[in-house]
Image (tube, rainbow, N blue to C red; front, side):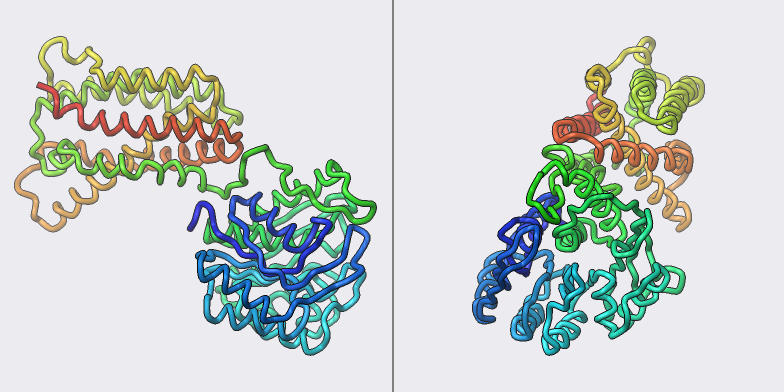
Length: 501
């Protein structure tokens, strides 16, 4: 998956900017992609209608396609208006040779007025092209034409048509409810190759009362191509794109473009931000710390703890500093609870703060009594512990829930991943009978398998990700910085015992 996918639109041009490649390029940019375009047709049109079409020779279209793909890796393709059979064959031949990872085909066949836009030979050629796509996005009249059936008048009938077309072409079909009446406006991904019960993924939506629908099909399909290159998950992509498009329709009046069916507002979302799928922002933070996390894995402390060869004085120092850290960490979690926007998140962080204090008490009561430090050492905060807690205090003082959630997250995530690896290897040695005697820290390592902590980690990741997806561009940048700095402190925290005594 690519953070900034390179997306090629193969479509006609709309000089008024609302549809065709102009809408595609805006949609690709709005979804965080880098847009390119190969023009299949030049049109004279505006918000009131089309007054002329000029189709360049297919050879020139092929020259455009070759110029792009010979120099730039194409991660996704959106195919829109293909005006004649020669153009369609040219695109099909290019796809066979280049075969991008994501191909979305919007079969432009029927105008909003209901008029057919393609001659019979072109319509036949287009049906053959469908099998080269990963996703096909017809409107309901086009869905009927592709099946040589009447236009579906109900949502269940539309879904049945979508499944028949998916089975026929071997691709996923997006069935769109925009042409149906009523307050709802559902969309559904239909995949006839999926197991029974999983063939239809429906995403509900409300109908936006606006006449500004020019280019919605173009915008939807190009946005989906971009998101799919980012997520690799059609359902996740559709949920993000549908929410974005509903907002674009709702904000369309702000543009005041034209006297007919105006365009949607592609950049209605917060300035400088790109809509993200569930888990995508958390994954970005995690991926950005790959180098530091690799350094954690390579630390002598981790290897010696795994092997059971860690000097007892270093383990005792680690436990004492962990107790010191948890006391301060609980304060940061309490602050996160106070700032959290939902009751669910408030409750989670408050409970986590309580658990930290309980764990600190248990450390003192059991582990530290068996692995004592010299008198007075237990109550002293080491320089790394102090620096880490100062960082969390600073994040708390910013007053941003999103930044604080990012700052506290590595204590969950890093600890869970390192612990899971340690526990897995310990369990493998135990089950294989290759362990040499009793592991001095085996009982500690086994605590890493606690399912309650694993679930808490999953929730912490989810809440931080949710905050990141809703944040402004500046806040996202601050979250990345806070998360990254906490990961550095996690590394230093694991390394600090090796420098003790």
